[in-house]
Amino acid sequence: AQSVAQPEDQVNVAEGNPLTVKCTYSVSGNPYLFWYVQYPNRGLQFLLKYITGDNLVKGSYGFEAEFNKSQTSFHLKKPSALVSDSALYFCAVRASSGGSYIPTFGRGTSLIVHP
Amino acid sequence: KAGVTQTPRYLIKTRGQQVTLSCSPISGHRSVSWYQQTPGQGLQFLFEYFSETQRNKGNFPGRFSGRQFSNSRSEMNVSTLELGDSALYLCASSSQGANTEAFFGQGTRLTVV
Image (tube, rainbow over all chains, first blue to last red; front, side):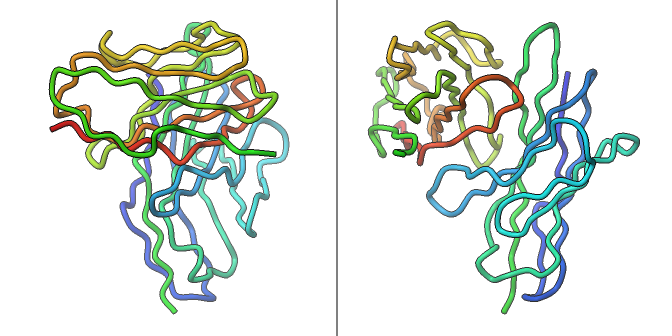
């Protein structure tokens, strides 16, 4: 069975500093990897995805993520954090399992950016 | 382009009742997925419909069911409600396959008392 781990429930960072939100995954085939962000009382918003090709993908709001096949990781990064980046971040994976592509989400990481 | 619309936004139901939630996807999107979000379990996949056919199904009991109409609008139904069904139910639409991103609605907050 496929799984996604976000090892940190919460990440704290000062505004202007770089941020990293970690994600590792376990699948049997080639993964499709996604990052989403959720603001309070809202649905999830798509940030970026890795399908194939260049391991470094760039997304919305200055976020980027690096696909590392050997470490089965897909960490989300941003060079300079903003207070408005404070939100709940979800990593998700889809991979073929018996012909099905069940989406699996991590438990989420709360990012808090301090002024 | 209008986003994903879920109705109602809030619901309070009694144990044993049933409930139907509605989702209107982004125009042109043929895939609709449903998720249950709770503080304890996180975001869990319920099922996905594509062109009126259930394409994928998560690990939920048969009390949870869904359907999709010819206009891609979708409904999910929960019968014999239990207290543990209290959650935020999210609907998401996407244009095609597993490698396309999902666009989420704001959710329906279901409280079972």
